[in-house]
Image (cartoon, rainbow over all chains, first blue to last red; front, side, top):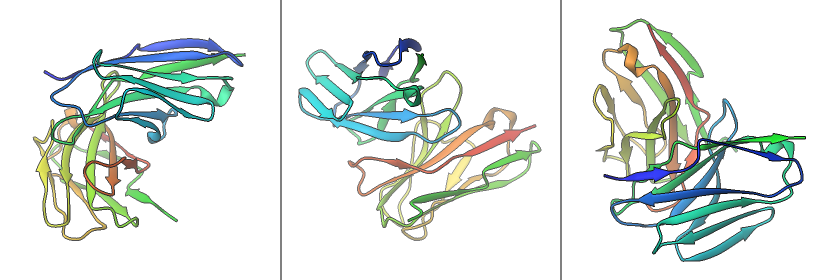
Length: 109
Length: 112
């Protein structure tokens, strides 16, 4: 079966750095996506990785290791507005997205 | 720029009733999708359409139907609603089936 695993909840302090991990087992691989979802809102696209390595976009970076079936999302200089759920999704061989259940990130002042 | 719109925003429905959730995009995207999101679970794909005139079944299609008569619209119909269809429904679209998906604001549906 296909499976995406990520922690259910994480807590971090404003101004700090947090790393959200995602491991996956899927039928084929056509890229890994990270989305942010604030409570009661729609998911919004953050990043896309298809090759191994680090993609940096402002305060957010995403890393991929295809051989290990592993990715992480790194958030720097945390702000209170970063409190949200972060969703990891893998595009499988049929170009369908397989989604993790999401990691709820709580930021404390 | 509207992007993707969904209607209604929320709905309470009696079991056994028929309901159509509407989704419209103005980005001329070829591919469109319907997902449901339930607490503690990842987004699950209900149906998808890679281009106007074609549709396909996702992970959880039972009890739902879709049509794609044109590029912009992708309605989702519940023929006879059941309480297990209580969920938040998101419509999404992408330029092609391999591109980034963008989501509508969602419809919160409660079936009693």
